[in-house]
Figure 1 (tube, protein in one colour):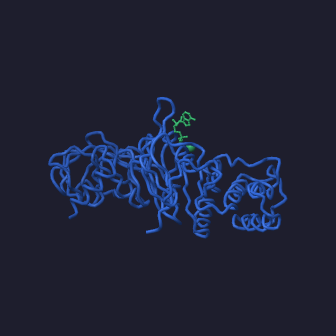
Figure 2 (figure 1 turned 30 degrees about the vertical axis):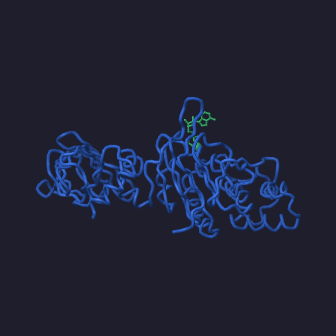
Length: 361
Ligand SMILES: Nc1ncnc2c1ncn2[C@@H]1O[C@H](COP(=O)(O)OP(=O)(O)O)[C@@H](O)[C@H]1O
Ligand SMILES: [Mg+2]
């Protein structure tokens, strides 16, 4: 466990009558890579703005290294932001863009030059000092924006969807680079995205947000394997989600059949939702299948086929398989008890943790 660096305690943000953040609580530790993941409008940028001091919490407390910072002005906080649109100065060259903040702080010229050179080296732009911003590509501008933020040696770097303007190939390269940069600098990154793949690939810890609330937090593996509700299961990765009934611990019913599973801690006969990931389903014969389905469509996705099937109740099942299926054929789907993930309707993270703990004891 690292040292806590930022914490939000019951933070509420309200504009007029609209509540944008509803009691947000979290703790951020030193030296790790965090991602705020959620759909557009869920409050990600608002959280970053409150951390940076560009916006004030309506209620609640914000702590930095144990001190309440609600009233500390932005320029006295040890954080820097990389904005979505980079916000570079178009009429200045690379050096002057990166040096800007240091000049305002009136650092000696030689020290500024040293720090700027160092920052540009870190983002692999050594030698680009005199280039105009207009002569730089999207990916290079992105790097200048990052250099400008890290040159101040912040303890925390905030990145607001910094890769969303880049094309897919460059975005993937930058994901690796950012992750590496974070490890090299050893400072805390708080990265914002609406892209679940990006979040899963880069983070030590993900906070999933919906409508101004953190609905789940955990490692990428936790969030992917144990989504606590329909929203998370659906938002993070491809999922098959059907309604079911938790008959008793380790027995769940869906599509009219009973299956062994590894979940528990619910009321007998509690209505639940079932998630099975497409890669956990395999194609088999009707006799060997746990579910019988009719193959509707199949698409080749480069490494696997994506096969859409329907069961007799009309539920859709997506399967990722290296085997082909025949469209229109009746086949079996196989899965193991541990591939079934049972979710309570709209369970909160706290209730989820408490239930699993009591069940596992
Ligand atoms: N200055 C503002 N005044 C009123 N509403 C705002 C303001 N800034 C953001 N909002 C609203 O707050 C919500 C969350 O916005 P934001 O934090 O930018 O979401 P995200 O970054 O997740 O897309 C949105 O509904 C947005 O319209
Ligand atoms: Mg935003």
